[in-house]
Image (cartoon, rainbow, N blue to C red; front, side, top):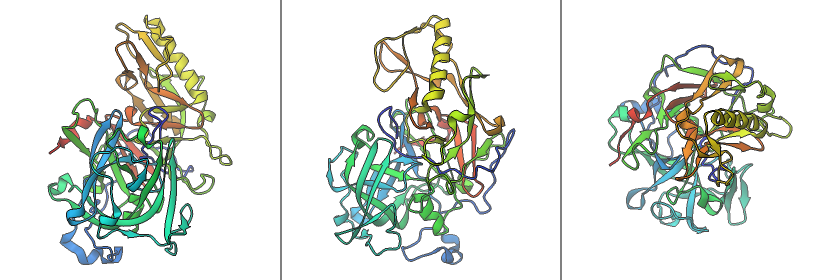
Amino acid sequence: MSVLYACKLCLLLVLLNSASHTVAGTVAPPTPSAGFSLPIVSNHNTAGMLGQLGANLTSIGPHIAPVGWPLYGVLVGVGSGQTRHFYKLGLDLVSNLTWMQCQPCVPEVRQEGAVFDSALSPRYKHMKPTDPKCTAPYTPSGRNRCSFYTTSWNVAAHGYLGSDTFAFAGSPSAGGGHNRDVDNLILGCAHTTHGFERLSHNILAGVLSLSRHPTSFMSQLTARGLTDSRFSYCLFPGQSHPNTRHGFLRFGRDIPRHDHAQSTSLLFTGSGYGQSSMYYIRIVGISLNRKKLNGVKTAMFRRDLQTRRGGSVIDPGTPLTRLVRAAYDVVEAEVAADMHKQGARRSTVPVQGYHLCFGSWGHVHFPSLTFNLYEEAARLFIKPELLFVRVNHEHLCFAVVPDEEMTVIGAAQQVDTRFTFDLPGNRLYFAQEHCSADTHPTV
């Protein structure tokens, strides 16, 4: 999901009704009526049984931690009993499906822990080609199974659909502690991958999908009546607490309330959006040091409904922000000019993964960037320290890169901002926050 590390661990969203408007000023996200409590149910329980569970409802709070700047993983357990193993899956708002490497896998990309072996998991079930869920984009297989092929940016995976028990850490508000099991979740067992080695950082086993597609983790929980379709995350700087602390993927009433939060519409994925499961937002302009760049036009961010190219999404699975080429060229020229005025010297030596780098920069004041959203009523501010990275002793690089198709606000520029996705309300809420304060020590 990103050219930068040639990856893209998907974590992004489908966007909703373009007819809805951005909320002006500051807005508090709606408070869920009952909060997000995830019942621990067996694979035969349905939403109709919620009333019978009563006090047995328990919450989850999956752990999020950096797995190599600036990528983040979610810790999940797969399997049951002695065969359960824990894996780190990339936070993904783009992919249709949660998938992970399974034995046998070619190539077998190095990951943290052993590659999952479905043959050793007693509750694992292959999805049959006659299953109603085995429909496009999935296809029946000659081995009496249902196959999948998924691509996200520069990562592809192919294998078979199945289901198993997933385990997640308990919600912090529920006291954390014991793991919470969710039975019979659909996942993709990937036996072939391409490009995953550039994404995994030798840690990730696959991706956890939070998109709107019916087979995503979020959609499966929603279909069972186990969620209120609201989730939130706050990415903390990976360099601050390497391997010592973790944040949380929060749901419902576990989501902190920000009375100063801004919001913007999520654009609907139905008509014209090619059934995309990504979360699109509408960018209308960009400001540098809070001054609007007149060369950046609204049309540069428009999605072409026929070619299905263009548009803008939020995705923590994309390491660096990617600007559509026309807008990037304007922004790069302005950033380079601002740095040059302060005495910085642009490097003529190419640095892999970056487009604008400096060989000397002294004591310059780095510029800030602001994404002006629909009607310019909401503005997503990116502080200067999130826009530049020192890649070695000789080069400081602009942590935004060009893209030939679309715009993606990536993980590096999402740090210290809480993002809350309200899917029923079709809105994205965001507010600056010291995200390290919402972390716990990793045991």
